[in-house]
Image 1 (tube, rainbow, N blue to C red):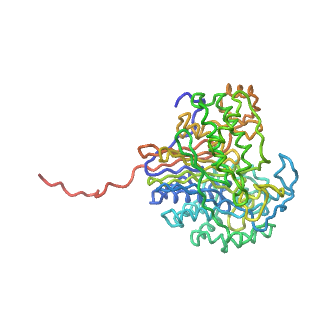
Image 2: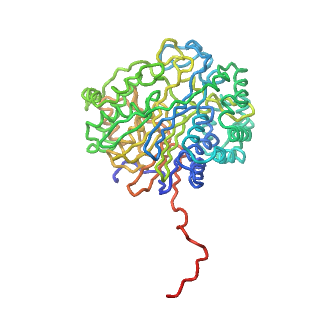
Image 3: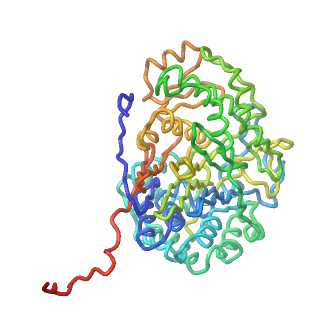
Length: 558
């Protein structure tokens, strides 16, 4: 469509035999390599994730957690929940909160829930990736790890994005000699263009290639990690690692203007609240209002506030808290909420309980193959560089997922042994007439599901291409000031102020979204946005026509 108030900075990729979109070009290349080698979308996604743990080490790693939304070629959907959980030694009073009020509500004395060994939860990423490949992939695990091992051992040139993240975290990284040795050589952050070689991590990945996930979950690698963390006061035990279990969850489903929207269920709030917001918006003519108009931005802001007012009911481990999913995603409930919206004035919507912080420092991959297998996977080690330490001799950066639990006892999100963390991740697949139409996701903590909702509105209501939808300026609020990206029209921003919204103009809302659009002719278009190092790689062409020979027989005379 034309007339949009922004220009795309990147260009999409197209293909007919597969598409890989990740937040680093080397990870996208690793996934494409698996497709070219005869693997499927699951193989490609897992290879990309292992490679991201090398080239995007501040965002994701084998000692983190995440969700993979998989659609198989036969139409089955499953969400593989590898989210981290609290160690068995964790208790509601493990940490000492410094305040009962925001903005310091989640902070603890000594930052023990945020930095260092005491912030590390039981990881699920490695087991999740390996199990997905084992159940649904075609290639051996060693093949999927080979690109990651290659880049770790040989090294790669770091981007400005990674260099900036290192500089941002330098004071914490400097406190740990092992991680500082890699990212702060001679006491200074690595600069863009310098080469990063992770020899220890290459050996760790090689051990996993040989032994599988058992190397960490009960094996010698896991024992070494537990001992190293315990020496610094960590809560994690070898039994925690050996006893971790994935959960296969049925996704939540809903409809929006003739499209079926399918996303992750609790403990993710993403799928539930994307559906809730779309249900409310379905009663308004967003297409007629136009992208970036004051009327449409006002409605987006109001449904975001409604979703966050209800979000407390859907942000806990369903094994510990009863979650009213059916009501939250029902059209009837959306109608009740819609009726209370003032279309001319900003309103306040009462929240349930104090909202926790969530990691904005995550990664996402969107992958599809020619057979109809699709993967939307969002993975993280929580904060930038996780716990900001490294397990000596392994290259492993552990998560700091304990920061997502409420440090105050007696709350719905308080620490409990074995309790899974909450998340706003929203790896989403959209169908039209039963066939895949879109797949997308992104990092960004609390801002994730609101960004997914806006991308779907851009695609379905405003008729944008996938490239336009992932790059379009965003807004976000959970009830306080309304964050608006600089690319949104100034006239619309002025009108929002007149409606009573308190605006904060920000460089970006959430992180690098990537997605794939499927055409009726079987082709795919992949797109990644400017908010990360995202790259789309599509496969076209194919093998030779059957029975083709380099030296054909001489033609016979007739």
